[in-house]
Structure formats: structure tokens, C-alpha cells
Length: 198
Image (cartoon, rainbow, N blue to C red; front, side, top):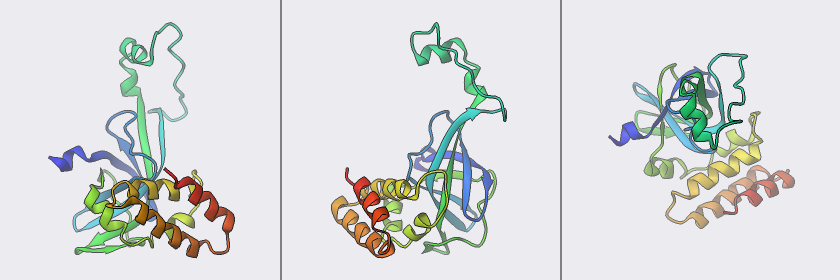
């Protein structure tokens, strides 16, 4: 049953480097920086959520304001229940590793995820296992996304630290790893470290 409750969406677009999933419920995307996975027979792909959107199902057609005479947002959906079927929430995840034959790799897999693959939030024990090595940070730092890499790195480390036995020790280790990766870019390092404070 835990497997079902962790399911947050279904893949509708995929490439070697990332995938896009549509949520089953409106506004229920995983938080920025969350570790998610999708499984294809013998391979599990891991991604970090970097972007989420809620928009109309019809491309090019924007929702219009409807709440002028309503007392709350909930009233808008009560008076226009069809809105729940006309809107969709999607999220994008950057692929940061995969598991094959019980071995965990923190780099890109040979193949992209499959369309209609289920996407699950990773349970705490899997997040702890994945974050035992911080080598995936290099992927986050060297990619071009709609969100600044500094924001994504900090968000993912904050998410992971919440599931560690000692969040402070984890964040100190992450700071040391970042200091090595960003040794020539003090401003980026400072920006990330400033965002790690909780």
C-alpha cells in the first residue's frame, strides 16, 4: 500500500536527461528538490524535481479569472467543478542516477524513462541511501534549467537533510563537497550555502 500512496504522477515526456510527469491531482506536485523515481522492469531511474506548473489542458488556452463574486478559492471550484478537469499540474525532474541489478549509479542511464511510467516519491531510506554520495551534485551544478542551479542544489540538499539521522552533519559534508566543486566560483558557493540555512 505504501507504493500506491507514494505515486505522484505519470510520465508524459522523457529524454536522457530529464522527464515530465503529470500529477493525478491538481496542485499535488512534489516539492522543489524532491528525489523521485520511476521503474522500468529492471532499472529504476532517479530524478530531482526542478520545475512544476499548473496550466490549461488545451495548449495556448489560458485560464481566466473567475473569483470576482466568490468568497474564497474553494468557492470558485464549487461553482465551476469542470475546472478540475480542464487544468493539469505537471512537474519536471532532472535525472541524477539509476539503479540496475541492485547497484546504484549517480550518473545518467543509457536510456530515458518510458512514457506512462509511474513516478513515486522516494521513501526516506532510499533518499538516505542515494545521498550517501554527493557526486550527483555535479549534474545539478552543470545543467541549464528554468530554475537557477543554486536554488535547485540548495532545495535538494534541504530535502535530503530532513531525512538524515543528523541533518547538520549531512549539510556540513555537502558544504565541503560544494567547496571543492565550486572552488573557482565563490559567489555561487556563497549563494548556495546561504540557502542551506533552515
